[in-house]
Image 1 (tube, rainbow, N blue to C red):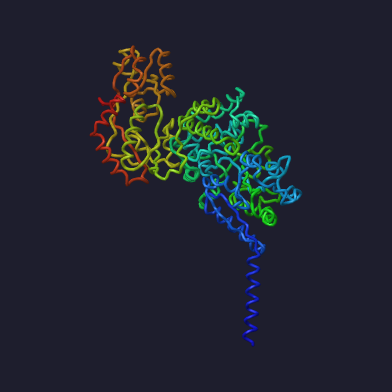
Image 2 (image 1 turned 180 degrees about the vertical axis):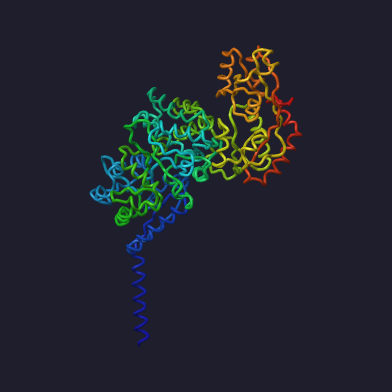
Length: 625
């Protein structure tokens, strides 16, 4: 009898438990994630909801960017998921226009939303008929910079556009690269267009660009002029390289570039040991009355076709009430009116939050508002202008609407060769011979190389503090200035320098003490020659400026390399010249790469026996040296 009673009691308990489990409502949620950290945050949030609400169970699914956007139209039709991640701007307005999402204020009272959400944020998801999304998070854009680089160079974050341009110039002049730009995913480039378009012509001009409509010429010229201030001076590190945004952040961490324009999604990728050394400042504006910021919104939307939309109120309220912890966990900023600044994990996020709070216009990001073809063409225009270091592609693609062809390799490139960065001095044509030669040598060894050119020896020497891997080409005298560099024993070639004179007598006799001799580059061997002959070197920034001064002077004297002589032979037809210096040129690597020295040396020796080497020497008029 006792056994039967216990059996019946146990059966009742089992049935009761089973009934409670089956009574729990399952709600399905689909999320777009870009990192495992984001996935962990979402899991924790929905686990907490299940713990606090025994009535519901969450079926959570994660998707990458491409798959999520590809499958979204189908989900909106089938109602496969009750709650979906989505994005603000035109991407939200498109779903509203298609009438495929349920107004959130039919599931949560409007007054509750108004009390909890920042007004600008609520306005971004509301129209005259209702509030169509529950804001999840927002993230600011601005410049991530290396604090130690700024400190070493004695520079500060700028507040205005003119200060920003000056900052870039100061950084480059001291031997560091000011900027690195992610282009591989295409969309990071478009933050430039957002900020610059509003800076020169307000949101109306930005909308003209989004619509690909006829542009007001003054605004168009101002946009090009503003970005053009950053071009033509090699301020972007390795512009030919297809940087991902993750790689761009690492470049800044490693001091190879001082700063990069980036959104705060980068927070989760910053090395914890580097975090205190990475700063953030808002995009500097040219106009004092411009208080706009790029702050894309992440959202929750409910498909009209969702099977369980009537049961979502508890979940939506939980997400709204726990917004701050979730947004911060995702590396973004909360969207509620609660005070959350003290909980932000870094000064970078606090700076961004303050900037957004002071903004009167929040932009949802160009590629979220514009047609995909317009966005991609604009991104290609910026990428090619950065690569070419001039604004021609920007004029053609963004202003004139022409199709710009430029391969940004929008699929993540896992096959890129390891990259080495070499410094060089401007104003000497033979550096291009060395660049071609060493590209071939390093490719044999499995490396790609990038050349960053500086205008002074001091800047070139300083570049080794900021990640440079060596010097492209120098004479042996350079060794005494740079103990951190190792000379490759095999010379690249020999080079001859000539004294160019207006008449034969000047070249055939000793130079008068104190004579002015014009040059275009800062060369140690020429400096030594000038000291020995007691003459003054006067440097010019271009060959054109040098020849203009030469032609205007009564007793003009120049020092030119072999290739400059042949390149400018038409301007030297009335002049004469004589050899003053003949020296070998060497390649140098930083001692952190000392294991490469014998490999480079052997590869260079072999290459110098080939027809390609002889052709390269002939191309740069070095075959007789």
